[in-house]
Image 1 (cartoon, rainbow over the protein chains, first blue to last red):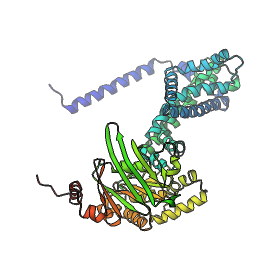
Image 2 (image 1 turned 90 degrees about the horizontal axis):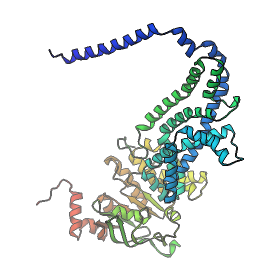
Image 3 (image 1 turned 120 degrees about the vertical axis):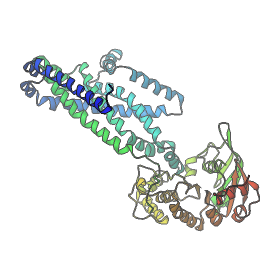
Length: 273
Length: 255
């Protein structure tokens, strides 16, 4: 006998809830909660991590990310302009750079900067902050260059024509008219880039450092040596989320704010003067 | 040097191709100081391209453009300095979207003419008043109606003290009830003696304000003369066909 549509939907939904209920019940009955609690979140161990996990590790994560983002943005802007250059060689160089570093694991770049550079150029020594900034900057710039290029190209051509018709040179037009508007357009994707760099800053773990230079991941890993519990990782994870979730909301908010409005185009449905 | 000749615009044998398409096929055009010249013609006739070639926003394929005695088609000319003296008004206004009204007016004055902030603001405000916009200096462009935006765009061009104003279908993107304000500003500008080259579909405006009307079709100037001749009593068949379509848009031709 054929079921009505309403009946079929009811049965399907009921079955899904039943499966969920069974899984939860089985897990709750079989799990050793004490053990799990001790392994993942031991309040005593958690308390012992403070205040250093915030005052040292979180602060260092923010510093590494900030430095890497700043360098990445500056380098990315140069690459984006090279990519849009009328000189073919510049376009090639920028294109090769972007393809190269977007195609490599970030860890490889970190290891190359941390260990490869001192080997290749004896006498060159980067302190930890510089090394992380360079590595994060290189990784970030390859992605941000493409975002910036797209943003620059998204600025309506009429804006450039208006500026040029007023006697502004191409360079002046780029700096005073195009780039400010491009940044407004790409603020949401740039925020996402900042989130990615925050997470990638954990790779600083693979570059040697002293206790004062620990960021969240390394801090947690070292804490793990004295405490046989995953609690330090859980606390570090919460610290990361405290940075990334607000940023993600910010990105969505910015997207909503700029998404509906087209920049530079006249609005036809307006009341008269 | 501008006083040596009363010719502001001198276009000679201008050709422009986009790829294989020849949009301008040999245009000659002279505009004297204080003259208002309107260019009319069907879409695709090349009239906007001609206008954009006058300040070399579009690079001509061949031919020469001389404005105020300076040959703009010379590759060694300081094109930015020349453009600073040629105001241009676009169909889509093109106000700088990230700047408020007053900054739209001052930015080129400061960066190109190197005027001080105070002087630029003073000149900008005076020109806003000239186009009938007051009290909206800090508004962003998208907070203004199309008619207001276009008048701000005119004020922006005027703030550079241009010797010549180019208008590229300035009212085509406007709602019908906003057209009048913009045309009134342009009419006043013409009365004040501004040299103007206007691409337009507003036949009434061309008839009343223009000293001379050019009818273009298919990349050539087909007919040229005073408005009462070109619009009132056209000699060329193509001009007549075009005008009857524009002036009686609901009329269906026979056959």
